[in-house]
Length: 413
Image 1: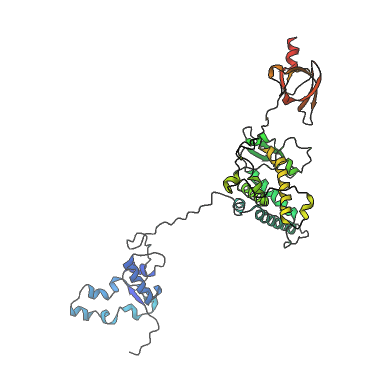
Image 2: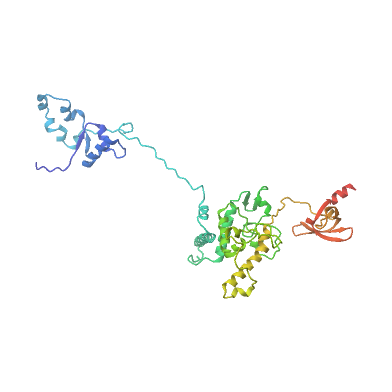
């Protein structure tokens, strides 16, 4: 048949099937889903329409008719009458209901997504813990601070500094201050405010006589204000030992110490005997190198050796400098010191004391009376003049035992 078909329509008397065909959102079980896929491959949902059962010629066969009735009903051979009419005369399409309760629809399972953060850490904490050395961390923070200044100048229409220039020493120092201040904000027992800081009485920081430096950093106080040292040596930063940044700082100092480790490991762990016939004192080098230290004893070197072409003389000179600083600066730190955190009574003129003498037994210590006190800038008395039976002496208060205060003497009179 040479008939050109311009448009095709499909009819069904099942509203359920029509809903299945027109569905684009719901998901069906396997059998129905496969049949719907076949229909969609050969047609589009817009081509499908509903025909009432009374007008459906397919019912004539499915319900059964006699031959005479089949011939009498021409719709089996010619189709339903409305197909011979215009589209406006076609049966009215029913309103399709939702397929929520249909058993052929696959139940949609609820999907949930769990988003977890890494320990609730902030971006800054993750940045600090992502670096393996102290210098790299300071450089990263310095670049961030430079970009921050760049944005500030740009907002205020000021001269914008060049971003691509190498970092300066001042920028690296500012980055170090920024990192230390951020770490101190998380210290336990210490709270910061615009007016200063507050340290809990039970906090170990309280024993360090803390104060805030001009950079806003919490530092160790003490009595070294007039010492001929730089501020970093007199008043080091206070940092919690559990902070990751502390391990980076210790590692950085360890690396920059270079070959001084052999000298450090040569420090004896046991008592050193005066008898040359005794065994050699045990040192960490005995455990690491199976000997006390270097094979060649260090020679006497002077400052001129630093310019020598012979590297071994230079290394001996540097080792000698390190050893002197080690003995002068580090060894005194090994002695535990305790600082009072409660105000104590100062010695006053008229107090009765015993003058401590390490060379005499206690029952022979001299009795005396305080005749003059010497308070420091912080109003604490650390040395007094004592009049004894035979002379007048000046002694530090740690060499005096207070027997009777001047207040008790006045009250007893």
